[in-house]
Image (cartoon, rainbow, N blue to C red; front, top):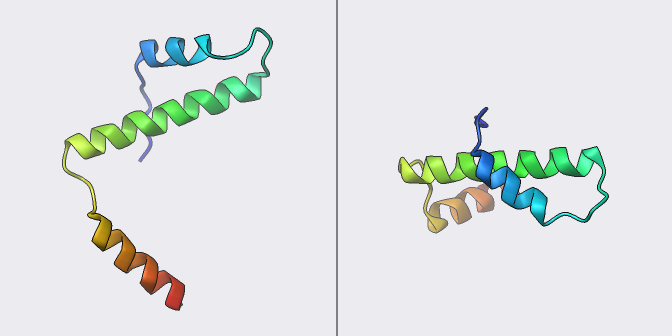
Length: 65
């Protein structure tokens, strides 16, 4: 599940990289990506990850369907 909180510094750093004029949609999209990355890093820290081999096996099963 996507985290509902993100580090403010992550957002500020990301927004600094944007051009002077940018659409609200681009800003929102960037914030969503940051939230997803923060969530993924948190899950990885908690050991909630799958091995590459496991993911490849799942992909092969999906392709067969």
